Amino acid sequence: NYSSDNTIGTLHGAVSLLNEAEIAGPSPELAIGYSGLAPVSGIVSLHPLARAYRRRALNMMHMANDPYSTARATQNIGLYNLGIGNWDDAAQQFKLSAEAFASLGYQRRSDESSGLFGNTNHYIGNFKVSLDSFEHVLETSKRREDLQLYMLVLTGAAENLLRLGRIDEAAAYCEEST
Image (cartoon, rainbow, N blue to C red; front, side):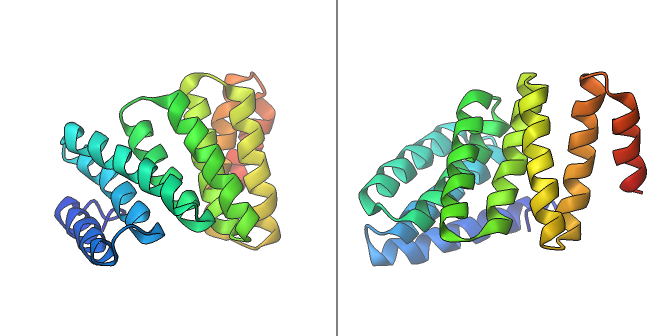
């Protein structure tokens, strides 16, 4: 629903997940459920609600002390922070998420968070840090033959190369992505 720009469906999915998680009480699933409603509430401009869910997610994440829920919750909270322009916190959350997913062996999810870390650093103006992140994802996604993620980060890497004045390398990445 999120990828298809279906706001109502996205909100429904996040609320349904949270409703199921609340039945279990304090748990890793509840941390994930709370964290999922932070960016979704932000999408519909309910920022006080989004901040409340972000706070609840962080508290539950620390209580649960579960590596997977930490990875998911920090990724979701990073998405909310990215959306409101709280880029330093978003970058920190994406870095934590990437590390947590990698420690669990979820390389695709780790790469997604690393790509978001790259996006965030691009917005901040940390073009070298962003480029390094995208090139790391290029390497791992190519090794895993994950063409979708590989193509997505090619353009991000090219944007950073342009900002760094490395025009020929940027053009090569753009050519490769077509």
